[in-house]
Length: 573
Image (cartoon, rainbow, N blue to C red):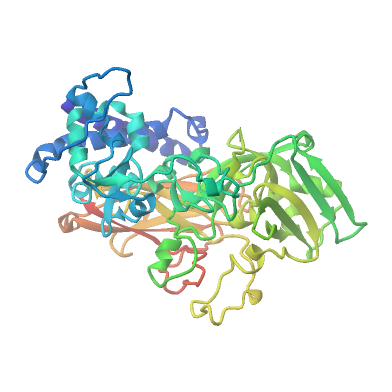
């Protein structure tokens, strides 16, 4: 049985890789396959998760004997079934309840405590049920250790729910030997929260890793992000600045006010049905937070902001009414000096809404593809992503893609919101909080070219296959600029290798979706002997803009526009 689990996991991983390579090769020849463009709930995500957990289960067995010497026997409380009469539990049945049983001999930890242990230098902790487990020593020696890192600092429950056959006595015994405590869980809203703005937050996917809980901000596991050309809605990163509003389709209204420009001032209101009756337009666009990869910039010098990894980005097919059609119907004419202001239904404690603005020239340009979106990947928007209407401004920083849109204003000035005037702006590396003047910097609109390695992950154990390792990731540039090339090196830039691209065949200037890339990167015999390898990735866009080599010279106090080479160190096996 154990051998079969190991073999099955290996076959699944191999199948997933072959499927991905076949799709990439097809895309490179200009034939975009529907099976990779459309998100299939039973497709590669389920396969990947199953394979991941298969590796975990097989690895548990493989190192079971090696860990016997260091394991100490523990006395576990034997939970009782909730029945009217006592029922004896067999050993394996009892083991299945260990993760639901509080260990009185161990301390209790909060989810925040566990989140702090998500990498080797801080320790690798995972949770299962109410159990907290320290797998720091186990993960590096485990063949599927890189998959364990997907759950580092979080729960393994979502993976085990998919692959239940690994809930065997041997696996559960080994897992319990790593237990260090109990997890404190709040099962219901506290009484003092019942009237708070956080009381009705939506339910999120368990694989999203929070950068903050209130407001909720989270990104998916980076290795899963690179598996789909269209990011699954439930794994799309979440960026909220304020509590998520509750809006019903029946009560929704969008106000449009024209207060500047040629012609008379006007004001009108649309309900959801009226917006949906307008001509429907679809655009593929990546949305990226201005602070994506901020955690890397923080290593140079501390910055203020959420510590995002490289997963604060997603690519989706958005559908809705074109903003240019709506504005023209109200008599709005081109004017290079005007702005379009967007306001959301999310309010701060002073009842001011989240707001942002873009130039009218972008809003009126049919090639700008600005959309009042009500669909995401063919499905209605979820609450976290702006239900029922959000504005999609392709090619711009995520902060301008206002969610829960309730008001649009054509004005002779930018939005006066904090997020337009005093945030999401770039500065010189020498500017600090004592000298910064937000009023003298331009608000970020189009984003710079960037790329990231999705697999392998940092510190992953990578097998060299016939002198090569497989590397894949994403690349994107703002302003509709197409990705021209992605270059990779594993010898500090002495030699570079060009990756294969998977991207839509859209014209330059209107290429708003991201590009996925993949490469079989050569590894020399000398590099294999060194056991550790650092991989660098850099993207080049259609204007031949290229990522800078390091963060030192692009550091800024808000940690935005973090687009230096993406560098990942791995261990070769």
